[in-house]
Amino acid sequence: MFLNGLGSLGVKGMANNGADPLMIVGLISFLAALIASLTVQMFFMAQRRKSRRQLERIPQDVMRKYVFRENYLISEVESPDWYLTDPEDRSGAWRNLAMGLEHLHPDIRRKMDRLARHGEGFLLVGRLGQDEISLSGTFEDGQVCITVSPMTQSGQRSIVDHDSFERLQEETKILRYAMEANPFPIWRLDGEGNITWANAAYFDLLSKLRGETEVVLWPIPDIFAAAMAEAQSGAQKARISLTPEQPPSGGTGPDGKLWYEVQMHQSALKADHADAKGDTRETADFEGALYIATPCNRLVAAERSLRNFVQTLSKTFAHLPIGLAVFDRKRELILFNPALVDLSTLDPRWLSARPSLFEFLDQLRDNRRMPEPRDYRAWRSSLIALEKGAENGNYEEIWNLPDGQSFRVIGRPHPDGAVALIFENISAEVSLTRKFRGDIEIYQSALDHDEQAVVIFNADGELEISNAAYALLWEDDPRERLTRDDFGHALQTWEAHCLPHPLFEDLRLTFNGETGATNSAMSDVIWMKDGRRLDFVMTPLQHGRVMLKFRMGIGAGLNAGLSTGLSTGLNQAKPLHPEEMSGEARPNTPIAVLMNYAASQS
Image (tube, one colour):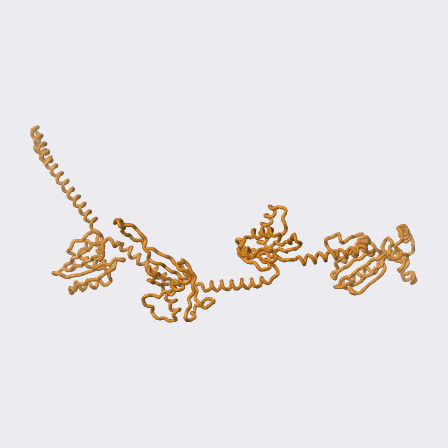
C-alpha cells in the first residue's frame, strides 16, 4: 500500500507538471518489477530458515519410514539421510536402502527381496554399536513400507559415522587378535568377581591344570582366585604358584609348580547420575579389573639357586678365621661372618641393621679396633681413600692396634659395585717375624764380633750374609746395598785385592757348575797385594748354601815398608820358575809367591 501510494503521488505529480506519458509508463513498470523481485526473495529466505529449523529439530536417530511402489520411492526423504547414499535417486532408492541397512543386519537384503516378491513382512533387530535398531517391512495396498526405528531413548545412544564405525570395528579385530596371540594369561573380572573375558593363553593354562582338553563352558573358572587370596588380598601385584595335575611340556619351577607374577589393573566406568536435587553429575562406577599373569619359573629357580649359594657361602664363611664384611653398591653392610664379630668386637645386632661403610669404620674407631688417627679430617679422607682403593682392588694395609694386635685389611671389588673388606689377625705372624728379625740381628752381631771375614752365598750364587770383618778386609760392605751381590762380583773384588792364585779359577768353575760341587769343603792360602796372608776355608751348609772364611795367617804382620821393599826388589830380581824351586820354596812363603808372580809377569 505504501508503495502504491508512493507510486500514485509520483505519477500525479509528474502529470501535473506536464511529464511525458511514456516516461510515466516506464517508471510504473520498473517499480512493479522491483516489488515482485523483493517479494520472491523474501519468500525463499523464509522457506530456507524454516527448513533449517526443521532439520535442527529432527534428530539423526529418529524413526525413518520409506514407502515404495514397484521399487520406486514415493515418500518424502529427510535430508541428510544416513541410509540412502543418494536421496535424489528415487528409482534406485530400493537398492541403495538395502545396501545402507546391510551393516545393521546381514539378513536385511534377503528379507527385503522376499517382501518385494511375495509380500512377506519381517521384523529384525539390528545393532548400531551398542544400540539396538528395529528393522520392519510391511506390504499394504500395493505399497511396500520399510521402517527403521531405534529401540531405546534418544539420550541413551551415540551416533557414529559409518566410516568411523568401520575403523572402530577394524581396530577391535586387531586388539582381539593381539590379546589372543599374547602368550601370557589375561582375564577380566567384573564388580562381582566373575570372569567376563579371558584370552586363549588363559584357557590353555586351565587345560594344563585340569589335565583335560574339554571345552570350558560358562561361567569361566577363576584358577587364580584362591592363590591371589592367599598371597595378598587386594594387592596390585603378587607372586603366586599353581600346582598342575600333570607336569606340562613347558616345564615348571624348582618345586614342580607353575609360578606367575600377577599384575592387577583396575578400571572405572564414568557415568552420569542425578542427585537429590535433580542435577546431573559425572561419577565413577566400578567396572572391574584386568589381570595379567607373567610366567616366572626361571626367575624363581634363579632366586632359589642364588639363595642356596648365599647360604652355602655363609656356612663356609662361618668357619673361616678371617673376618669378612661385604658392602653393596649403596655401601650398606649386606654380609658378614662370625669371625668379623670376634675381630671387631661389634654387636651382631648392630651389624644386622645394615650400617653404612663409614658408620662401620667409625664404630671400629670408637672400639679402638683400628689405628687411632691424629687428625680427624685426615681420618675422613683416609676413609674415602679406603673406599676408592677397595673399588680398584689395590687397598691393603697393616693396622697396628693400641692393644698390640695387628690386622691385615684388604679391600676387594665385587660385581655390581659391591666392596668386600677382609680382616685377618696377623698378630702371631707379626710376633714371629719380629722374633725372627731379632734373632737375625743377634746372629749378625755375633758375626760382626768375629775377627774372621765371613760371607755366605745361597744355592743361586747370591750373597746373603757378610760381617763387619769382611767389609773391612775387602773395603766393600754389601750390607749397604739394597740389592744382593752375586758371586761373580765378590770374586772380582777378591782378585782385585789379591795376588793371582789358581784358587780363584777353581772357585769360578765350581760356582758356575762346570767342575766340582759346592757341597765339598775346600781350603787354601792366598796372598793379598799388600803382603798379608789369608787362610781361606769354604764350608758347605744346608740347602745349597756355602760359607767362606778369610782369616789372617802368618806373615800378616809384615809392615808396609817391608812389603814395598819386597815389591821393589822383585822388579830387579831374576825370575824363577816353580819347577826350579825346591819343595820348601814352593808358594808357601811370601818370597816364593812374589817370585812366582814376577815370573808370570815377565
